[in-house]
Length: 383
Length: 186
Picture 1 (spheres, rainbow over the protein chains, first blue to last red):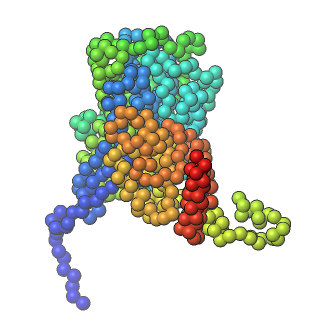
Picture 2 (picture 1 turned 45 degrees about the vertical axis):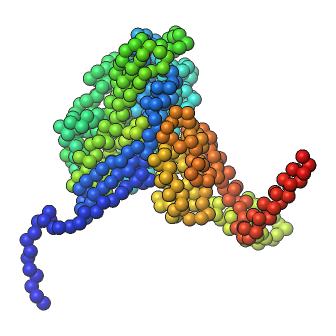
Picture 3 (picture 1 turned 180 degrees about the vertical axis):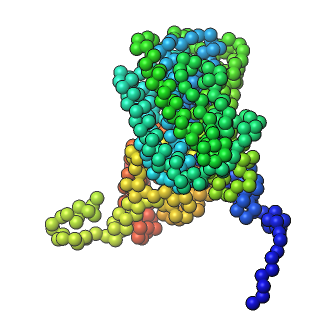
C-alpha cells in the first residue's frame, strides 16, 4: 500500500472542457417556448444565452392595421395570465389622449378586477415555481382558488382567460348583480389558501434549502437592468408604480409595498422574490376590500364617445403596475382612427434580460429555479 | 363501452368476453393515452387548468410525458409561429406510431386572430403535421378540450389494427366504385 500524496490544486486551474447545452424551446420548465443556450463547466453554469422569438405574434403590425378599440384584444394576448392588467395602461393612454374622464364606478371596478387578476397571476407564479421545485400539491391548491376567480371574471365579461372588458371610455358592460358578494367570498377564500400555502410550500424546509441564497440579484444590478415588479422589490427596492406614480384611483387606498428582506437567506434571492408575490396577494386583498366599501352602487359604466375614436395628433407613454412589473404603452396618433404606432414595453422581456447576469456560478438545477422565480410570460417577451 | 356491456350481459355468462382482439387492444389504447407536455401560448394556461383540480385530465388516463418518444399524442396548445413550426414537426416525427394530434384553439386551427396580418404566424398547424381533432375557441374552455379528448378516444376505438393495408385498400376501392357510380349517373 503506497501512501496517498497530497496534491495542491485550485478548482479553477483544472483544465476541464466546457459543454454547451440546449434547453428548450420544448421544455416543461421554461414556462413557454423560451430557448436557453447554456455553457456548463461540469454542472456549474458559466454562460446563459436566451434565444427568443418563438412566440412573436406581430403585435405592432396588428396595431397599425386595427382601430383603437380593436387593439384591445391583442393587448390581452400579450401577457395572457393577467389580461385585465394589460388592458388598463392601454385604455388609460387612449383616454388621456382623448381628454375624457371615466365615471367613478368604472374606476373602482377597474381597480378591483386588476387586483383580482394580480392575485390570479401570483397564484400561477407560485404554483409553477413550486412545480419547478417538484412540489405538485400547492399547484392543485392554488388552481382550485384560481378557478373561482376566473368564474367571477366569466360572470362579468364572458371570458375565462382573455376578457376584452376594459374599453376606451368605460367597460364593455356592467357587472353582474351578485358582484360584491362573490368578491367578498373569494377574498376570504384566498386568504385561507394563503395560510395553507405558507405551511405547504413557502416555509417548507426543503423548499427553503432549494431557493434561499440562490440567484441573488443585488439592488444595483436590478436598477441597471431596468427590472421592476416583484423582481426588483425582491431585491429590496420599494419601487411600485401604484405608490410612486399613482394612476387611476390608487392614491385612495391604504396598502404597503412589500420588499424582500432576506428572511431565510440573502436579500434578492429566489425565495425573496417569491415571498414578495405571496405578501402581495394579501395586499391586493386589502385593496379590494377597501374598494368594495367605497364603490358607488349607481352610475353609468360607459362614457359617451363618438363611433369612431380619433385621438388628436400626438404621442403618449402610459404605464401601470402589472403583476410582473411596469407595463407601458407608447402610443403615437396621427389624427386618424388607427394608431400610427403602439409599442409595448414588456416587463417580462426586461426582467428576462437579467437572467444571464444572475445565474452564473450556480448549478444547472438552480438555473431552472432562477428562471421560475423571475416569472416570465413568453407572450410578453416576444409580443 | 361495448366491451363492458358484454360483461354485464347474462347471455355471455359471468366474466367471459366474446369479441375481437382488436376491440380489446383498442379499448386499452384509448384509455391510457400519454401526451407530450409542452405549451405554446395562451391555450397552455387553459391546458394547465384542465390538468389541475377542477377538471382533472388524468381521469381520461392521460399522463404527461416530457419526451416525445414516450408519448401517444400531442396537444398543440397555442399560436404556432414560423420559427416554432419546424420544431413541432421534429417533435411529431420523433413520436412513435400510432400517434395523434389535437389542435387546441383558433390559432392552431387556422391562425385565429393573427390570420390576416400575422406575418410570422403559421396559418394552422395542419400545414406541417396531420391533425386528428380540432378544438375551436380562443382559448377553448376546459370542457371543450375534454370533449375533444373523448372524440379522440372514440376515434382510437374504431381504428383498424390488423390487415390495415388490405382493409384500407378495400375501403378505397369501395369509395372509388361509389364515386364512379355517382359520376356515371351525372
